[in-house]
Image 1 (cartoon, helix red, strand yellow):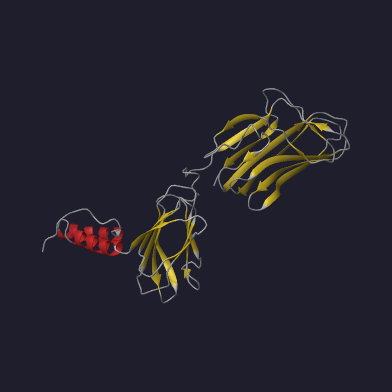
Image 2 (cartoon, helix red, strand yellow; image 1 turned 30 degrees about the vertical axis):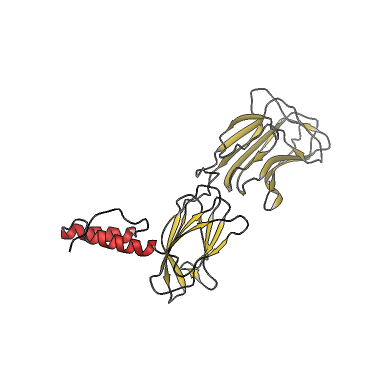
Length: 311
Protein backbone atom coordinates (compact mmCIF):
# COMPACT_ATOMS: atom_id res chain seq x y z
CA UNK A 1 0.00 0.00 0.00
CA UNK A 2 1.29 3.44 -0.81
CA UNK A 3 0.13 6.96 -0.02
CA UNK A 4 0.57 10.13 -2.00
CA UNK A 5 1.62 13.37 -0.41
CA UNK A 6 -0.49 16.47 -0.62
CA UNK A 7 -1.86 19.39 1.36
CA UNK A 8 -3.58 18.45 4.62
CA UNK A 9 -7.20 19.42 5.18
CA UNK A 10 -7.60 22.59 7.25
CA UNK A 11 -8.89 20.88 10.37
CA UNK A 12 -6.58 17.88 10.48
CA UNK A 13 -6.04 16.94 14.13
CA UNK A 14 -2.48 18.00 15.05
CA UNK A 15 -2.27 15.50 17.91
CA UNK A 16 -3.11 12.53 15.66
CA UNK A 17 -0.78 13.85 12.97
CA UNK A 18 2.09 14.18 15.43
CA UNK A 19 1.61 10.67 16.80
CA UNK A 20 1.38 9.18 13.32
CA UNK A 21 4.50 11.03 12.20
CA UNK A 22 6.38 9.54 15.15
CA UNK A 23 5.20 6.07 14.09
CA UNK A 24 6.33 6.77 10.53
CA UNK A 25 9.78 7.74 11.77
CA UNK A 26 10.12 4.64 13.91
CA UNK A 27 9.04 2.42 10.99
CA UNK A 28 11.08 4.27 8.41
CA UNK A 29 8.02 5.04 6.29
CA UNK A 30 7.79 8.44 4.63
CA UNK A 31 4.32 10.05 4.63
CA UNK A 32 2.70 6.71 5.27
CA UNK A 33 0.52 6.36 8.35
CA UNK A 34 0.80 10.07 9.11
CA UNK A 35 -0.58 11.07 5.70
CA UNK A 36 -3.38 8.53 5.89
CA UNK A 37 -4.54 9.41 9.40
CA UNK A 38 -4.15 13.14 8.94
CA UNK A 39 -6.10 13.17 5.70
CA UNK A 40 -8.82 10.76 6.81
CA UNK A 41 -9.49 12.40 10.17
CA UNK A 42 -9.09 15.86 8.69
CA UNK A 43 -11.70 15.18 6.04
CA UNK A 44 -14.08 13.74 8.62
CA UNK A 45 -13.81 16.79 10.84
CA UNK A 46 -13.82 19.27 7.95
CA UNK A 47 -17.04 17.76 6.66
CA UNK A 48 -18.76 18.92 9.83
CA UNK A 49 -17.24 22.39 10.17
CA UNK A 50 -19.19 25.62 10.02
CA UNK A 51 -18.61 29.36 9.89
CA UNK A 52 -20.52 31.46 12.42
CA UNK A 53 -20.93 35.17 11.72
CA UNK A 54 -22.14 37.35 14.57
CA UNK A 55 -25.36 39.24 13.98
CA UNK A 56 -25.83 42.51 15.87
CA UNK A 57 -28.47 42.07 18.55
CA UNK A 58 -28.58 38.27 18.16
CA UNK A 59 -25.45 36.92 19.84
CA UNK A 60 -26.69 33.44 20.85
CA UNK A 61 -25.77 30.37 18.81
CA UNK A 62 -26.50 26.76 19.82
CA UNK A 63 -24.27 24.10 18.26
CA UNK A 64 -25.77 20.84 17.04
CA UNK A 65 -24.41 17.34 17.50
CA UNK A 66 -22.43 17.21 14.25
CA UNK A 67 -20.76 20.63 14.55
CA UNK A 68 -17.17 19.50 15.06
CA UNK A 69 -15.47 22.81 14.26
CA UNK A 70 -16.97 26.31 14.50
CA UNK A 71 -15.09 29.27 13.03
CA UNK A 72 -16.46 32.42 14.66
CA UNK A 73 -16.39 35.94 13.23
CA UNK A 74 -17.37 38.59 15.78
CA UNK A 75 -17.01 41.70 13.63
CA UNK A 76 -20.67 42.62 14.14
CA UNK A 77 -20.76 41.86 17.86
CA UNK A 78 -19.94 39.30 20.56
CA UNK A 79 -21.04 35.68 20.36
CA UNK A 80 -22.43 33.30 22.99
CA UNK A 81 -21.88 29.78 21.68
CA UNK A 82 -23.59 26.94 23.56
CA UNK A 83 -22.12 23.46 23.21
CA UNK A 84 -24.35 20.61 22.04
CA UNK A 85 -25.69 17.97 24.44
CA UNK A 86 -23.25 15.35 25.65
CA UNK A 87 -22.85 12.56 23.11
CA UNK A 88 -20.72 9.44 22.92
CA UNK A 89 -17.31 9.07 24.56
CA UNK A 90 -14.68 11.00 22.68
CA UNK A 91 -17.09 13.38 20.95
CA UNK A 92 -14.97 16.44 20.07
CA UNK A 93 -15.73 20.07 19.38
CA UNK A 94 -13.40 22.93 18.46
CA UNK A 95 -14.33 26.61 18.52
CA UNK A 96 -12.11 29.30 17.00
CA UNK A 97 -12.30 33.11 17.09
CA UNK A 98 -11.20 34.08 13.59
CA UNK A 99 -11.78 37.84 13.43
CA UNK A 100 -9.54 40.60 14.76
CA UNK A 101 -11.83 42.83 16.83
CA UNK A 102 -12.80 43.75 20.38
CA UNK A 103 -15.69 41.26 20.66
CA UNK A 104 -15.30 37.97 22.47
CA UNK A 105 -16.67 34.48 21.96
CA UNK A 106 -18.16 33.01 25.15
CA UNK A 107 -18.38 29.22 25.01
CA UNK A 108 -21.16 27.93 27.30
CA UNK A 109 -22.01 24.42 28.41
CA UNK A 110 -25.66 23.36 28.00
CA UNK A 111 -27.98 23.26 31.00
CA UNK A 112 -26.99 20.63 33.56
CA UNK A 113 -23.51 20.15 32.04
CA UNK A 114 -20.18 21.60 33.20
CA UNK A 115 -16.53 21.55 32.29
CA UNK A 116 -14.45 19.19 34.45
CA UNK A 117 -13.46 22.03 36.79
CA UNK A 118 -17.12 22.81 37.50
CA UNK A 119 -17.23 26.01 35.42
CA UNK A 120 -19.74 26.60 32.64
CA UNK A 121 -18.00 29.20 30.46
CA UNK A 122 -14.77 29.64 28.53
CA UNK A 123 -13.99 32.95 26.78
CA UNK A 124 -12.00 33.49 23.58
CA UNK A 125 -10.74 37.06 23.54
CA UNK A 126 -8.44 37.52 20.57
CA UNK A 127 -7.99 36.49 16.97
CA UNK A 128 -6.85 32.84 16.62
CA UNK A 129 -7.83 31.96 20.19
CA UNK A 130 -9.46 28.54 20.26
CA UNK A 131 -10.69 25.80 22.60
CA UNK A 132 -10.62 22.09 21.80
CA UNK A 133 -13.15 20.10 23.87
CA UNK A 134 -13.96 16.39 24.31
CA UNK A 135 -16.99 14.97 26.10
CA UNK A 136 -17.23 12.52 29.00
CA UNK A 137 -20.84 11.28 29.12
CA UNK A 138 -20.25 9.22 32.26
CA UNK A 139 -19.74 12.41 34.29
CA UNK A 140 -21.92 14.70 32.14
CA UNK A 141 -18.91 16.93 31.51
CA UNK A 142 -16.98 18.52 28.69
CA UNK A 143 -13.19 18.30 29.12
CA UNK A 144 -10.89 20.94 27.62
CA UNK A 145 -8.11 19.10 25.73
CA UNK A 146 -6.28 22.19 24.59
CA UNK A 147 -6.72 25.90 24.06
CA UNK A 148 -5.08 29.15 23.08
CA UNK A 149 -6.39 31.99 25.21
CA UNK A 150 -4.45 35.19 25.67
CA UNK A 151 -5.25 36.70 29.05
CA UNK A 152 -6.47 40.12 27.95
CA UNK A 153 -9.35 41.13 25.73
CA UNK A 154 -8.30 42.62 22.44
CA UNK A 155 -8.19 46.45 22.41
CA UNK A 156 -9.52 47.40 18.99
CA UNK A 157 -7.04 45.06 17.33
CA UNK A 158 -4.29 45.56 19.93
CA UNK A 159 -3.82 42.53 22.17
CA UNK A 160 -1.23 43.85 24.61
CA UNK A 161 -1.54 46.01 27.71
CA UNK A 162 -3.11 49.43 27.36
CA UNK A 163 0.05 51.36 28.29
CA UNK A 164 0.40 54.17 30.78
CA UNK A 165 0.04 57.93 31.17
CA UNK A 166 1.02 60.76 33.51
CA UNK A 167 -0.71 64.13 33.73
CA UNK A 168 0.21 67.00 36.07
CA UNK A 169 -0.89 70.45 37.14
CA UNK A 170 2.16 72.66 36.73
CA UNK A 171 0.90 76.22 36.66
CA UNK A 172 -2.35 76.55 38.58
CA UNK A 173 -2.55 77.45 42.29
CA UNK A 174 -5.89 75.66 42.58
CA UNK A 175 -8.01 76.56 45.60
CA UNK A 176 -9.66 73.72 47.51
CA UNK A 177 -12.57 75.13 49.57
CA UNK A 178 -13.29 73.77 53.02
CA UNK A 179 -16.11 71.25 53.15
CA UNK A 180 -16.63 71.04 49.36
CA UNK A 181 -15.64 68.07 47.18
CA UNK A 182 -13.34 69.43 44.44
CA UNK A 183 -11.90 67.76 41.34
CA UNK A 184 -8.15 68.26 41.13
CA UNK A 185 -6.98 70.15 38.03
CA UNK A 186 -4.51 68.14 35.92
CA UNK A 187 -3.94 70.15 32.78
CA UNK A 188 -0.45 69.27 31.50
CA UNK A 189 0.38 65.93 29.87
CA UNK A 190 3.79 64.44 30.66
CA UNK A 191 3.34 61.31 28.51
CA UNK A 192 0.52 59.10 27.29
CA UNK A 193 1.09 55.69 25.69
CA UNK A 194 -2.54 54.59 25.99
CA UNK A 195 -3.71 51.95 23.47
CA UNK A 196 -5.85 51.68 21.46
CA UNK A 197 -6.81 55.23 22.50
CA UNK A 198 -5.03 57.75 24.77
CA UNK A 199 -6.03 58.14 28.41
CA UNK A 200 -5.92 61.92 28.32
CA UNK A 201 -7.73 64.45 26.14
CA UNK A 202 -7.16 68.19 26.30
CA UNK A 203 -10.91 68.73 25.86
CA UNK A 204 -11.53 67.02 29.25
CA UNK A 205 -8.17 67.66 30.96
CA UNK A 206 -9.09 66.54 34.48
CA UNK A 207 -10.23 63.07 33.42
CA UNK A 208 -8.53 59.85 32.34
CA UNK A 209 -10.57 57.59 30.04
CA UNK A 210 -9.79 53.89 30.49
CA UNK A 211 -9.01 52.40 27.04
CA UNK A 212 -9.48 48.72 27.91
CA UNK A 213 -10.99 46.61 30.68
CA UNK A 214 -8.29 45.40 33.04
CA UNK A 215 -6.33 45.91 36.24
CA UNK A 216 -4.63 49.28 36.73
CA UNK A 217 -2.20 50.83 39.17
CA UNK A 218 -3.10 54.44 39.91
CA UNK A 219 -0.95 57.01 41.73
CA UNK A 220 -2.11 60.50 42.68
CA UNK A 221 -0.35 63.26 44.59
CA UNK A 222 -1.00 66.84 45.72
CA UNK A 223 0.91 69.41 47.76
CA UNK A 224 -0.69 72.25 49.75
CA UNK A 225 0.84 75.64 50.46
CA UNK A 226 1.28 76.99 53.96
CA UNK A 227 -1.94 78.27 55.44
CA UNK A 228 -3.35 79.62 58.67
CA UNK A 229 -5.32 76.41 59.18
CA UNK A 230 -4.23 74.50 62.28
CA UNK A 231 -6.72 71.62 62.43
CA UNK A 232 -8.89 69.42 60.24
CA UNK A 233 -8.29 66.70 57.64
CA UNK A 234 -7.43 66.40 53.94
CA UNK A 235 -8.89 63.55 51.89
CA UNK A 236 -7.81 62.29 48.43
CA UNK A 237 -9.71 59.62 46.45
CA UNK A 238 -10.62 58.55 42.93
CA UNK A 239 -13.96 59.39 41.35
CA UNK A 240 -14.84 56.63 38.86
CA UNK A 241 -17.70 57.01 36.39
CA UNK A 242 -18.06 53.38 35.30
CA UNK A 243 -20.25 52.53 32.27
CA UNK A 244 -21.33 49.30 33.99
CA UNK A 245 -21.62 50.22 37.68
CA UNK A 246 -22.18 53.98 37.62
CA UNK A 247 -20.31 56.45 39.83
CA UNK A 248 -17.93 54.93 42.37
CA UNK A 249 -15.57 56.46 44.93
CA UNK A 250 -12.46 54.29 45.04
CA UNK A 251 -9.27 54.07 47.07
CA UNK A 252 -8.40 57.09 49.10
CA UNK A 253 -6.11 58.50 51.76
CA UNK A 254 -6.58 60.85 54.72
CA UNK A 255 -4.01 63.06 56.43
CA UNK A 256 -4.39 65.66 59.19
CA UNK A 257 -4.00 69.36 58.46
CA UNK A 258 -0.63 70.42 59.97
CA UNK A 259 -1.12 72.11 63.32
CA UNK A 260 1.56 74.69 62.50
CA UNK A 261 0.16 75.65 59.09
CA UNK A 262 3.15 74.12 57.27
CA UNK A 263 3.32 72.84 53.68
CA UNK A 264 1.86 69.34 53.47
CA UNK A 265 1.42 66.66 50.83
CA UNK A 266 -1.04 63.82 50.32
CA UNK A 267 -0.61 60.80 48.06
CA UNK A 268 -2.47 57.63 47.20
CA UNK A 269 -1.47 54.48 45.32
CA UNK A 270 -3.59 51.42 44.71
CA UNK A 271 -4.67 48.80 42.17
CA UNK A 272 -8.16 48.78 40.67
CA UNK A 273 -10.21 46.86 38.14
CA UNK A 274 -11.68 49.29 35.60
CA UNK A 275 -14.10 48.66 32.74
CA UNK A 276 -13.30 50.04 29.31
CA UNK A 277 -14.65 53.58 28.94
CA UNK A 278 -14.55 54.39 32.67
CA UNK A 279 -13.80 58.03 33.47
CA UNK A 280 -11.26 58.58 36.26
CA UNK A 281 -10.58 61.82 38.14
CA UNK A 282 -8.99 62.77 41.47
CA UNK A 283 -11.18 64.23 44.19
CA UNK A 284 -9.87 66.42 47.03
CA UNK A 285 -11.79 67.27 50.16
CA UNK A 286 -10.53 69.21 53.15
CA UNK A 287 -12.15 70.32 56.39
CA UNK A 288 -10.06 73.05 57.96
CA UNK A 289 -12.53 75.91 58.13
CA UNK A 290 -10.70 77.96 55.48
CA UNK A 291 -9.75 77.52 51.80
CA UNK A 292 -6.43 75.78 51.14
CA UNK A 293 -4.31 76.21 48.01
CA UNK A 294 -2.36 73.64 46.00
CA UNK A 295 1.32 74.36 45.48
CA UNK A 296 2.24 75.23 41.90
CA UNK A 297 5.70 75.64 40.46
CA UNK A 298 6.29 75.58 36.71
CA UNK A 299 8.47 72.60 35.76
CA UNK A 300 7.89 70.69 39.02
CA UNK A 301 5.30 67.93 39.34
CA UNK A 302 3.76 68.57 42.75
CA UNK A 303 0.17 67.73 41.78
CA UNK A 304 -0.98 65.09 39.34
CA UNK A 305 -1.96 61.52 38.57
CA UNK A 306 -0.36 58.60 36.74
CA UNK A 307 -1.89 55.32 35.59
CA UNK A 308 -0.54 52.05 34.23
CA UNK A 309 -2.33 48.88 33.14
CA UNK A 310 -0.74 45.84 34.78
CA UNK A 311 -3.16 43.07 33.85
